[in-house]
Length: 282
Image (cartoon, rainbow, N blue to C red; front, side, top):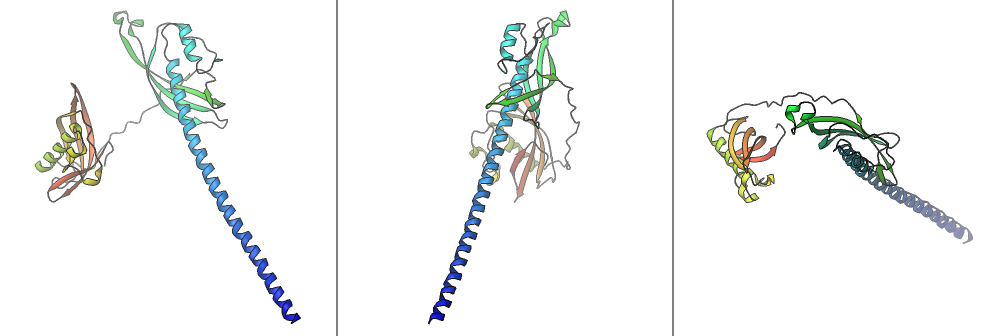
């Protein structure tokens, strides 16, 4: 009996030890999973925070470049506007003719290793044409400036350490968009696409596009425009096309503009329906 009791004791002791080990393993695994979840959450939060910070820095750079490029001839007004971006900013006001910024475009934004942002901004500006040609007094001439702006962050706010620096105008690649098809559509297809364009530009609700688009397309009408003319249509197949390149002219309150649309199509049982409207070649 004593020996049996001793063996039974050893059995229960071993079982208890294994139970403790298993519990520790499970606990460690759960802790690891929790730590991983917290890491992922922190990483995602940091990414979202970085994106938001970059967006704010880019807008700050654009706003500063816009004010820097605008000079109405009053140095005090100029200083007040620029020092809103850093009260300690050092600069000399412009001189000569006035200049006004019309628009600012953020071309690029990079975050340096020291945490500062460098933004490249393009500015559309206007200056009095009469400053160079007295016969054009009262006329404003269009111009463009390209600048690099440094933006730093401190205590949750942004500031600029220096005024914008002029940089060369970037080259724009000259690439002609071509389509790999060029078949004239049949009369039936032309009518179907014309009806779609008319409803797409002037329609007031999705119901106006019924029987013109596939049900799952989720295409909605622009509204408020009138189709003036369909100037050119080419498709991949004359009678049952899957793709179309369309040039059309639309008008609104006397203003006319030409549109170039690429349409994905679904042709079945003699009917042509629009699947997608895109500015990108299909």
